[in-house]
Image (tube, rainbow, N blue to C red; front, side):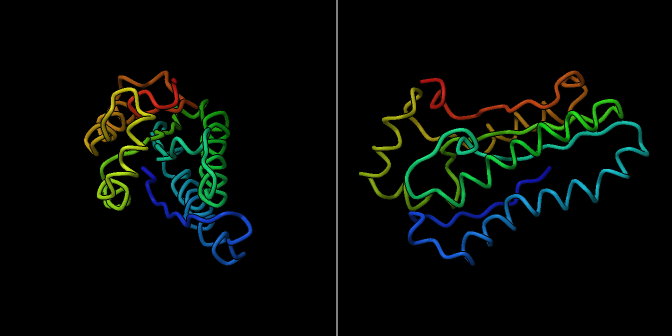
Length: 163
């Protein structure tokens, strides 16, 4: 499972090339290198699972998310492309796109009541997700129960992107 990620929030006019490249290197180049490294091992075993943690920002965005959203969109496309390339080898490649999950990365939002209220107003379930809810999706995708699931994006966002 690939869950590495970083985020620098800024409007495009305020994002330096170095900041943009840092986010891209971590979020997409790292995933590419991981996939390229593990593929020979998965191919030799005759089956496998690769799961990328993307984000709802792979298909939605906010102002100030130029670096992050573009990297997560690229990661979702990498997922879909590898799923097509590796399907005949018995290897599935899927993504999980979490919404706002109560992690350290979200702590500044959760602790700011005004920002938290703004986020919660977008979530039909009216709460932040919990890390175990993302882990449960990963367990399914890693299990034999998902043997016919590849190229998919499991969205864990309390209904945010359905609205």
